[in-house]
Length: 365
Image 1 (cartoon, rainbow, N blue to C red):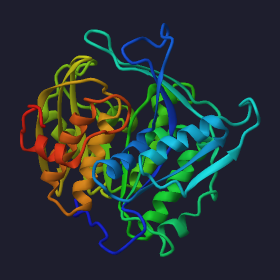
Image 2: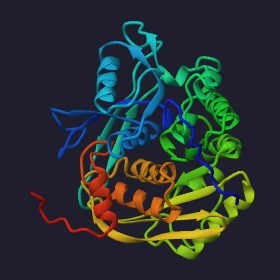
Image 3: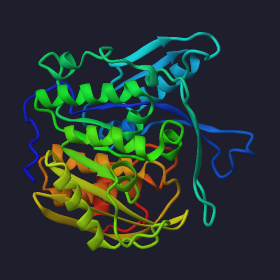
Image 4: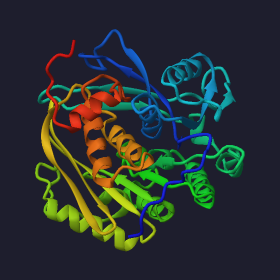
């Protein structure tokens, strides 16, 4: 594996993400099917990384996405603006009045508690960004001297939205690589997105091609098998045990199959209950394993933990820290993000650094 090089020259953004941003409706401590009120957040696997890099780590980030031009779309935009993410690449698509042609995505998500697992119900058919076509984003201008980004992030959720989104992701990756911008890709397998369009076989066809254009590949305990067909030995269906030796072998197998990869990282999560998880990470860089052992953490809202791991890891790489530091930063940021509601991080850099040092949760006042 070759070293991962991050451009040091001045560019408009530190990180640009490509993906869908949905409106998340959260019943809080209740259930989606019985609640009478929801709290709303914005969220999306690729977007959450850009927002974490902006709000927690203070970097300049942008989101390339599309929304239907109506009040719901404007609410999503308002949430994005509150997060500080640049919306200059947001495409507004005319709304037909009822959503027959184009609409904005909704994501109903229960946090879970104890023996009751977290659960999601997405309502995202015919969304604006799922209909994006090749040529609708000017990638050459976006990654070229007119703008430029030091990093580009997208993932398997965006690639699953339609045939055209995978093509758009490929074009964006090609333009980024042409201009020396590292590409990160989170496999982020979602059964609900793939099951009606060919299932895991289709997911593997799409992702095996996209991963050949990637520098940093991210996943979790399920993604590498579902999205690339690389099996992890000795792992049960419920991932109750995560044998580290098997993970090392899996990462090396992925590296051998995709020699373009510079860094491969996987979170390590064991769900003892919805409220308490084992949490850690493992990575392969320059043929060496970096392992942050699992520790048990308390969970308020698990959604977005992996995205916050990704943003912490990318922050370390963008600020020229060691890969070991970057992986530990990702683990700490992901753990903190899961202590607050919503998809996105509410942590501060000071809190992340304290968690990395093993700081206590004693009140600070």
